[in-house]
Image (cartoon, rainbow, N blue to C red; front, side, top):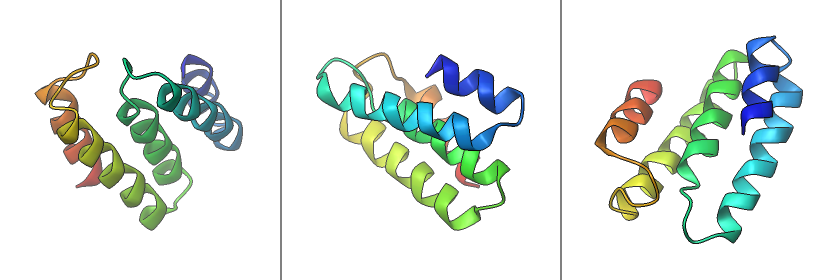
Length: 88
């Protein structure tokens, strides 16, 4: 996830998306991590690339997941609010 953040910071959104996708797959394998975090990051990359519909879908998925987890796995209402803000 951090590698994706670095590449996104420098504008290499395609490479950032690769690392965020890998991160989401790893998060999915473990029951103690929220997959909402890398999905939100994928949404930000899609938004920065001008792919609004794709970004919205990632943000919606992140919101659904964080709500279904009931803020376990290190997430909070703040994360939900951030994802909603990104969607808006």
